[in-house]
Image (cartoon, rainbow, N blue to C red; front, top):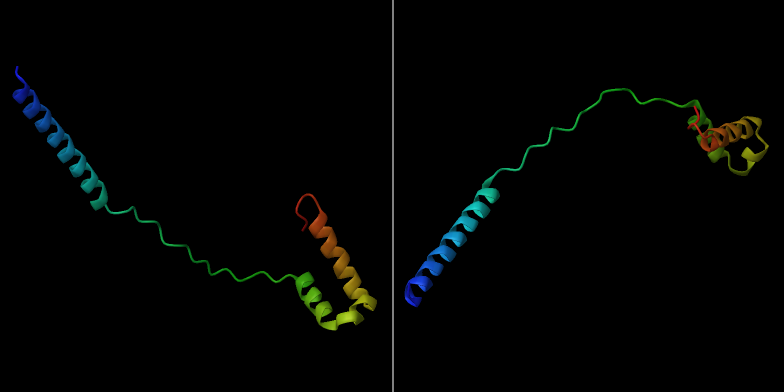
Length: 89
């Protein structure tokens, strides 16, 4: 084989590889993205925590809360829940 035939053969192979790569790239771009399921909506009523309501009342009392026995007990319970290794409750 002479040089011209080898050059033409190499050019044809390069063009064929380029066309194949372009076709694969375009096929991947056109594929639609998989749809994610819609977020689930729960209609469960929110839980009310009596400790949370007490802590809110103590926050509103301000400095007077340091002398209130209910606030002192609520703070102790809050510390116990927060610092317990099992997660409290």
